[in-house]
Image 1 (cartoon, rainbow, N blue to C red):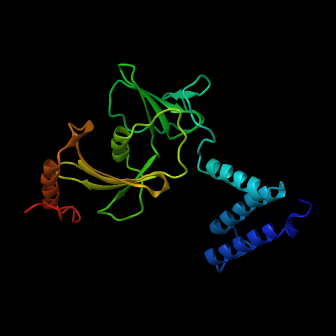
Image 2: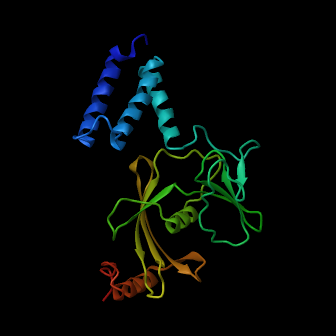
Image 3: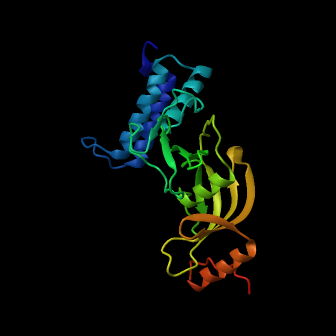
Length: 250
């Protein structure tokens, strides 16, 4: 494009980012760097680059989708286990810091994907292979009612209920898991009981699960029947666990 700043698309984006910056920092000192405004300005640079390359219509949308996945550190093509699809051993760095989840099984080998930092490959003592994307699920504890966040225990359970298979092409957004998370023993610092209520799958499909788990021997999570779960709910009530005993059976 011969003159980017005369482009109606660029002028629109420039105006939007200026308005955003004004709302973000209404009393901004133009002589000083501002964090919020810097984010708007960087976004405008990325947008301008796409416009400057002459993209519009379909090519603009395709380019934007590619950029969005790159910004989320998501692969552009499915990850496979074929030769050339590198997996780094846990003693290596894979060009980023090793971010493996807690190991629930002693003796297994862990490998991190060189293409996706949240994807791991596990090989157990019987040479059985499994995979986990630590960002595939985010957790909403209904007792907290806050923004969903990553929970390694819920991720571990969900990965058992819904194993990940290769080739793997991650969704643009994580799946949201609604849970009840309890602490039933005053000797335990961390939660020891979890109810998986439902999961919001891609395209906002909600799948009801209603399955119950307890931390067993401080090593792994095992499934329990509903009546045992309700007994543990009552124990949580005795610990004044933020209303977590409301469902306690009388």
